[in-house]
Length: 240
Ligand SMILES: [Zn+2]
Image (cartoon, rainbow, N blue to C red):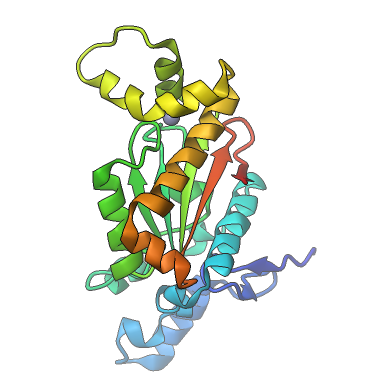
């Protein structure tokens, strides 16, 4: 049988290979052996060590998770959700934050092969750095310790398409248009380029408009990057 070395999405360690006991079986054995030990005492490292990651290693963990998603080789489906739920009742230590579009075709945790307590996810149509989103991501970084923020645009984004069209829309939908306008101007009518430009503009906004986030970046504790999710392949590409 082919041995598959996979890197844990949270700690960067290699484990979970075929032929090795699953995390669930290890935990079951641990519970049996531990008897009266609490769940927290024998839980895997995963829920405790996430904020130890550097910005670069946190980003790498996200990209490794996406690679597993693209290859349909998810590790997160082996997680014991009951234990993860119990372990995150009183605290959370997400290792990364994602600012995603609200689009239903971008299931963020799945896209990065993560489970409960691992990602701090903010979503709004067009993945915009609004003041409420900035406040949320400040909380994620300064209080919870996320060391990377990924602003994730995606192919076929309806919000960007509508902003490019600029036609009358019902209700308050047009509120989304003004923040996307700079990308519309840069994209010169090309949808894919406009979506990528928008992700980069929103990432730049996050990194510069918030003195709190800018300070964490300056101290080397945080990285803000932009990415592009392809609906057809599931692949995330980093934008520079
Ligand atoms: Zn979208």
